[in-house]
Amino acid sequence: MWFVYVIYNSPNKKFYIGQTGNLENRIAEHNLKRGKHFTSKFDGKWELVYKEELENKMEAIKREKQLKSFRGREFIKKHIPL
Image (cartoon, rainbow, N blue to C red):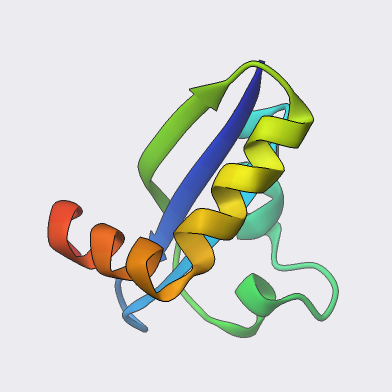
């Protein structure tokens, strides 16, 4: 199984959309703040606010791209209380 997820950092009012094969591990990595990745730039905890389970990596990548589009971001803002 693969996941598309949205995490939110409430102190900074930022959200991040990604995909992974191991959701729990990936969220933990975001909160470790290592490297120069987008999520490491912000203080505060990243919390899971949305996830979708997909059958394979290709479907997850496709759905991630959809959620990162303008309409996808509007869907997130409308359906996820941030």
